[in-house]
Amino acid sequence: MTRIDAGSRDCALNPEPDAASAPLPRRSLAARLGITSVARADLRRRYTQPGSQFVSIMGADVHYIDEGHGDTLVMLHGFASSLHTWNRVADELTRSHRVIRLDLPPFGVTGPLRSASGAIETMNLPAYRRFIDTFMQALGIERATLLGNSLGGLISWDYALRHRGAVERLVLIDSAGFPMKLPVYINLFNSALVRASSTHWLPETIVRSAVRNVYGDPRRIDALALRRYIEFFQAEGTREAIGKMVPTLDFREVDTDALRTLEVPTLVLWGAKDRWIPTAHAAQFASRIPRAQSVMYAGLGHIPMEEAPERVLNDLRAFLDAPRA
Image (cartoon, rainbow, N blue to C red):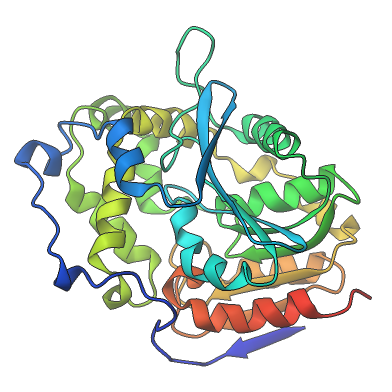
Protein backbone atom coordinates (compact mmCIF):
# COMPACT_ATOMS: atom_id res chain seq x y z
CA MET A 1 0.00 0.00 0.00
CA THR A 2 1.46 3.34 -1.07
CA ARG A 3 0.33 6.71 0.26
CA ILE A 4 1.34 10.17 -0.98
CA ASP A 5 2.06 12.76 1.71
CA ALA A 6 1.57 16.17 0.08
CA GLY A 7 2.20 18.17 3.25
CA SER A 8 4.31 21.28 2.95
CA ARG A 9 4.80 22.29 6.58
CA ASP A 10 8.20 23.58 7.62
CA CYS A 11 10.36 21.82 10.20
CA ALA A 12 9.15 23.29 13.47
CA LEU A 13 9.60 20.35 15.83
CA ASN A 14 12.27 21.04 18.44
CA PRO A 15 14.46 22.92 15.96
CA GLU A 16 18.19 23.12 16.55
CA PRO A 17 19.48 26.45 17.87
CA ASP A 18 19.23 29.25 15.36
CA ALA A 19 22.71 29.85 13.98
CA ALA A 20 21.86 33.53 13.56
CA SER A 21 21.67 33.96 17.35
CA ALA A 22 25.21 32.62 17.83
CA PRO A 23 27.39 33.14 14.75
CA LEU A 24 29.72 30.25 14.06
CA PRO A 25 33.46 30.97 14.26
CA ARG A 26 35.07 31.41 10.87
CA ARG A 27 37.20 28.49 9.74
CA SER A 28 40.76 29.05 8.59
CA LEU A 29 41.57 29.12 4.88
CA ALA A 30 43.41 25.81 5.20
CA ALA A 31 40.35 24.25 6.84
CA ARG A 32 37.99 25.63 4.19
CA LEU A 33 40.18 24.15 1.48
CA GLY A 34 40.36 20.81 3.24
CA ILE A 35 44.13 21.01 3.55
CA THR A 36 43.89 20.28 7.25
CA SER A 37 41.76 17.67 9.00
CA VAL A 38 39.56 18.07 12.04
CA ALA A 39 40.97 16.24 15.06
CA ARG A 40 38.89 13.46 16.61
CA ALA A 41 39.24 15.11 20.02
CA ASP A 42 37.69 18.29 18.60
CA LEU A 43 34.78 16.30 17.17
CA ARG A 44 34.15 14.71 20.56
CA ARG A 45 34.14 18.10 22.22
CA ARG A 46 31.83 19.72 19.67
CA TYR A 47 29.42 16.97 18.69
CA THR A 48 28.87 14.58 21.55
CA GLN A 49 25.60 15.07 23.41
CA PRO A 50 24.57 14.64 27.07
CA GLY A 51 23.63 10.99 26.41
CA SER A 52 26.72 10.12 24.35
CA GLN A 53 28.52 6.87 25.12
CA PHE A 54 31.35 4.89 23.50
CA VAL A 55 31.96 1.20 22.96
CA SER A 56 35.14 -0.31 21.50
CA ILE A 57 34.42 -2.30 18.34
CA MET A 58 36.84 -3.47 15.65
CA GLY A 59 39.54 -0.94 16.49
CA ALA A 60 37.31 2.11 16.97
CA ASP A 61 35.52 3.87 19.83
CA VAL A 62 32.00 3.81 18.45
CA HIS A 63 29.86 6.80 19.38
CA TYR A 64 26.26 6.00 20.29
CA ILE A 65 23.33 7.30 22.33
CA ASP A 66 20.97 5.01 24.27
CA GLU A 67 17.94 6.79 25.72
CA GLY A 68 14.37 6.14 26.83
CA HIS A 69 12.46 3.05 27.92
CA GLY A 70 10.18 0.58 26.19
CA ASP A 71 10.52 -1.43 22.99
CA THR A 72 13.95 -0.97 21.43
CA LEU A 73 14.48 1.10 18.29
CA VAL A 74 17.89 1.14 16.55
CA MET A 75 18.49 4.00 14.09
CA LEU A 76 21.14 3.75 11.35
CA HIS A 77 22.09 6.81 9.29
CA GLY A 78 23.33 7.05 5.71
CA PHE A 79 26.57 7.77 3.85
CA ALA A 80 28.61 10.66 5.32
CA SER A 81 25.92 11.38 7.90
CA SER A 82 25.81 10.77 11.66
CA LEU A 83 23.45 9.95 14.51
CA HIS A 84 22.54 13.66 14.61
CA THR A 85 20.35 13.19 11.53
CA TRP A 86 17.83 11.48 13.88
CA ASN A 87 17.95 14.15 16.63
CA ARG A 88 14.45 15.54 16.43
CA VAL A 89 12.78 12.23 15.63
CA ALA A 90 14.66 10.49 18.45
CA ASP A 91 13.77 13.22 20.96
CA GLU A 92 10.08 12.47 20.45
CA LEU A 93 10.28 8.67 20.25
CA THR A 94 12.27 8.37 23.49
CA ARG A 95 9.05 9.31 25.28
CA SER A 96 7.70 5.83 24.56
CA HIS A 97 10.66 3.73 23.36
CA ARG A 98 14.25 2.88 24.09
CA VAL A 99 16.05 4.61 21.22
CA ILE A 100 19.60 3.69 20.22
CA ARG A 101 21.44 5.58 17.47
CA LEU A 102 25.07 5.44 16.50
CA ASP A 103 27.71 6.92 14.22
CA LEU A 104 28.45 4.22 11.66
CA PRO A 105 32.13 3.96 10.68
CA PRO A 106 33.91 5.73 9.06
CA PHE A 107 31.57 8.66 9.75
CA GLY A 108 30.61 11.02 12.56
CA VAL A 109 32.50 11.03 15.81
CA THR A 110 33.26 7.30 15.41
CA GLY A 111 35.51 7.60 12.36
CA PRO A 112 37.26 4.72 10.59
CA LEU A 113 37.69 1.21 11.87
CA ARG A 114 41.33 0.18 12.08
CA SER A 115 43.23 -3.10 11.89
CA ALA A 116 45.60 -4.30 14.60
CA SER A 117 48.40 -2.52 12.74
CA GLY A 118 46.44 0.75 12.68
CA ALA A 119 45.54 0.62 8.99
CA ILE A 120 42.12 1.97 7.99
CA GLU A 121 39.66 -0.81 7.21
CA THR A 122 37.62 -0.91 4.00
CA MET A 123 33.92 -0.60 4.83
CA ASN A 124 32.23 -2.93 2.37
CA LEU A 125 29.04 -4.88 3.07
CA PRO A 126 30.82 -7.82 4.78
CA ALA A 127 32.59 -5.34 7.07
CA TYR A 128 29.32 -3.63 7.93
CA ARG A 129 27.77 -7.02 8.67
CA ARG A 130 30.53 -7.84 11.14
CA PHE A 131 30.29 -4.39 12.65
CA ILE A 132 26.52 -4.25 13.22
CA ASP A 133 26.43 -7.81 14.55
CA THR A 134 29.19 -6.94 17.04
CA PHE A 135 27.47 -3.70 18.06
CA MET A 136 24.16 -5.47 18.74
CA GLN A 137 25.92 -8.13 20.78
CA ALA A 138 27.93 -5.54 22.73
CA LEU A 139 24.74 -3.75 23.81
CA GLY A 140 22.88 -7.00 24.45
CA ILE A 141 20.18 -6.23 21.88
CA GLU A 142 18.35 -9.48 21.09
CA ARG A 143 15.28 -8.00 19.41
CA ALA A 144 14.60 -4.53 18.06
CA THR A 145 12.89 -2.41 15.44
CA LEU A 146 15.42 -1.12 12.92
CA LEU A 147 15.12 2.27 11.22
CA GLY A 148 17.62 2.83 8.42
CA ASN A 149 18.22 5.68 6.02
CA SER A 150 20.16 5.21 2.74
CA LEU A 151 23.23 3.07 3.54
CA GLY A 152 21.73 2.49 6.98
CA GLY A 153 18.62 1.13 5.26
CA LEU A 154 20.69 -1.45 3.39
CA ILE A 155 22.40 -2.51 6.62
CA SER A 156 18.99 -2.73 8.32
CA TRP A 157 17.16 -4.92 5.83
CA ASP A 158 20.23 -7.09 5.34
CA TYR A 159 20.37 -7.60 9.12
CA ALA A 160 16.69 -8.55 9.16
CA LEU A 161 17.31 -11.18 6.49
CA ARG A 162 20.32 -12.62 8.32
CA HIS A 163 18.73 -12.60 11.79
CA ARG A 164 15.25 -14.02 11.35
CA GLY A 165 13.18 -13.32 14.41
CA ALA A 166 15.53 -10.66 15.81
CA VAL A 167 13.78 -7.73 14.08
CA GLU A 168 10.37 -6.67 15.40
CA ARG A 169 9.63 -4.12 12.66
CA LEU A 170 11.57 -2.46 9.87
CA VAL A 171 11.53 1.14 8.63
CA LEU A 172 13.38 1.91 5.40
CA ILE A 173 13.87 5.60 4.59
CA ASP A 174 15.22 6.26 1.08
CA SER A 175 17.10 2.99 1.44
CA ALA A 176 19.96 1.70 -0.68
CA GLY A 177 20.04 -1.79 -2.12
CA PHE A 178 18.90 -1.92 -5.74
CA PRO A 179 21.35 -1.38 -8.63
CA MET A 180 21.85 2.31 -9.33
CA LYS A 181 24.29 4.92 -10.53
CA LEU A 182 26.11 6.39 -7.56
CA PRO A 183 25.35 10.05 -6.75
CA VAL A 184 27.92 12.32 -8.37
CA TYR A 185 29.33 13.45 -5.01
CA ILE A 186 30.03 9.84 -4.03
CA ASN A 187 31.08 8.70 -7.48
CA LEU A 188 33.90 11.27 -7.40
CA PHE A 189 35.80 8.84 -5.19
CA ASN A 190 35.83 6.22 -7.93
CA SER A 191 38.48 8.43 -9.56
CA ALA A 192 42.00 7.43 -8.53
CA LEU A 193 43.04 11.08 -8.79
CA VAL A 194 40.31 12.20 -6.36
CA ARG A 195 41.15 9.41 -3.94
CA ALA A 196 44.80 10.39 -3.96
CA SER A 197 44.24 14.14 -3.64
CA SER A 198 41.20 14.31 -1.35
CA THR A 199 43.15 13.53 1.81
CA HIS A 200 45.30 16.63 1.15
CA TRP A 201 42.80 18.99 -0.50
CA LEU A 202 39.01 18.93 -0.68
CA PRO A 203 37.26 22.33 -0.53
CA GLU A 204 34.33 22.55 1.83
CA THR A 205 32.28 24.04 -1.02
CA ILE A 206 31.99 20.50 -2.43
CA VAL A 207 30.64 19.19 0.87
CA ARG A 208 28.24 22.14 1.12
CA SER A 209 26.91 21.40 -2.34
CA ALA A 210 26.46 17.71 -1.51
CA VAL A 211 24.51 18.48 1.67
CA ARG A 212 22.22 20.90 -0.15
CA ASN A 213 21.66 18.20 -2.75
CA VAL A 214 20.21 15.73 -0.24
CA TYR A 215 17.53 18.19 0.89
CA GLY A 216 14.39 18.66 -1.15
CA ASP A 217 14.51 22.33 -0.16
CA PRO A 218 18.07 23.50 0.65
CA ARG A 219 16.64 26.48 2.52
CA ARG A 220 15.73 24.12 5.35
CA ILE A 221 19.38 23.47 6.23
CA ASP A 222 20.55 25.36 9.29
CA ALA A 223 24.11 26.61 9.64
CA LEU A 224 24.95 24.35 12.58
CA ALA A 225 23.97 21.19 10.71
CA LEU A 226 25.88 22.30 7.61
CA ARG A 227 29.03 22.98 9.65
CA ARG A 228 28.70 19.56 11.31
CA TYR A 229 28.51 17.76 7.96
CA ILE A 230 31.60 19.62 6.74
CA GLU A 231 33.69 18.91 9.82
CA PHE A 232 32.71 15.24 9.93
CA PHE A 233 33.66 14.83 6.27
CA GLN A 234 37.00 16.56 6.81
CA ALA A 235 37.76 14.65 10.01
CA GLU A 236 40.98 12.70 10.56
CA GLY A 237 41.00 9.55 8.45
CA THR A 238 37.49 9.90 7.06
CA ARG A 239 38.41 10.94 3.51
CA GLU A 240 40.95 8.12 3.25
CA ALA A 241 38.33 5.66 4.50
CA ILE A 242 35.75 6.94 1.99
CA GLY A 243 38.32 6.52 -0.78
CA LYS A 244 38.67 2.86 0.19
CA MET A 245 34.95 2.34 0.62
CA VAL A 246 33.39 3.85 -2.50
CA PRO A 247 34.94 1.48 -5.08
CA THR A 248 33.29 -1.41 -3.22
CA LEU A 249 29.76 0.03 -3.54
CA ASP A 250 28.39 -2.26 -6.24
CA PHE A 251 24.70 -2.85 -5.58
CA ARG A 252 24.49 -5.36 -8.42
CA GLU A 253 25.91 -7.91 -6.01
CA VAL A 254 23.22 -7.33 -3.35
CA ASP A 255 20.52 -10.02 -3.20
CA THR A 256 17.33 -7.96 -3.22
CA ASP A 257 15.29 -10.99 -4.34
CA ALA A 258 15.63 -12.29 -0.79
CA LEU A 259 13.37 -9.43 0.31
CA ARG A 260 10.42 -11.53 -0.90
CA THR A 261 11.05 -13.88 2.04
CA LEU A 262 11.14 -11.13 4.67
CA GLU A 263 8.30 -11.67 7.13
CA VAL A 264 8.70 -8.45 9.10
CA PRO A 265 6.18 -5.57 9.24
CA THR A 266 7.84 -2.94 7.06
CA LEU A 267 7.30 0.76 6.42
CA VAL A 268 8.98 2.34 3.38
CA LEU A 269 9.33 6.13 3.55
CA TRP A 270 10.69 8.20 0.67
CA GLY A 271 11.28 11.80 -0.33
CA ALA A 272 9.74 12.55 -3.72
CA LYS A 273 12.65 14.93 -4.47
CA ASP A 274 15.37 12.41 -3.59
CA ARG A 275 18.27 13.16 -5.97
CA TRP A 276 20.52 10.38 -4.63
CA ILE A 277 18.44 7.21 -4.89
CA PRO A 278 15.71 6.90 -7.55
CA THR A 279 12.20 7.26 -6.18
CA ALA A 280 11.26 4.18 -8.24
CA HIS A 281 13.20 2.14 -5.69
CA ALA A 282 10.51 2.88 -3.10
CA ALA A 283 8.02 0.90 -5.17
CA GLN A 284 10.54 -1.90 -5.63
CA PHE A 285 11.00 -2.27 -1.87
CA ALA A 286 7.25 -2.06 -1.26
CA SER A 287 6.44 -4.66 -3.91
CA ARG A 288 9.10 -7.17 -2.85
CA ILE A 289 8.62 -7.08 0.91
CA PRO A 290 5.34 -8.82 1.72
CA ARG A 291 2.60 -6.45 2.93
CA ALA A 292 4.97 -3.48 3.19
CA GLN A 293 3.42 -0.04 3.61
CA SER A 294 4.84 2.92 1.67
CA VAL A 295 4.64 6.71 1.97
CA MET A 296 6.02 9.21 -0.54
CA TYR A 297 6.69 12.72 0.81
CA ALA A 298 6.10 15.53 -1.66
CA GLY A 299 8.80 18.18 -1.61
CA LEU A 300 11.28 16.28 0.57
CA GLY A 301 14.67 14.88 -0.37
CA HIS A 302 16.96 12.03 0.63
CA ILE A 303 16.79 12.53 4.42
CA PRO A 304 13.12 13.36 5.15
CA MET A 305 13.43 12.54 8.87
CA GLU A 306 15.97 15.37 9.18
CA GLU A 307 14.36 17.76 6.73
CA ALA A 308 10.77 17.51 8.04
CA PRO A 309 10.72 15.37 11.20
CA GLU A 310 7.14 16.19 12.15
CA ARG A 311 5.81 14.69 8.90
CA VAL A 312 7.86 11.54 9.32
CA LEU A 313 6.92 11.20 12.98
CA ASN A 314 3.23 11.05 12.17
CA ASP A 315 3.80 7.93 10.07
CA LEU A 316 6.36 6.42 12.45
CA ARG A 317 4.00 6.66 15.42
CA ALA A 318 1.12 5.10 13.52
CA PHE A 319 3.33 2.25 12.32
CA LEU A 320 5.08 1.61 15.65
CA ASP A 321 1.85 1.75 17.66
CA ALA A 322 -0.17 -0.50 15.36
CA PRO A 323 -0.79 -4.04 16.63
CA ARG A 324 1.30 -6.60 14.81
CA ALA A 325 -0.75 -8.83 12.51
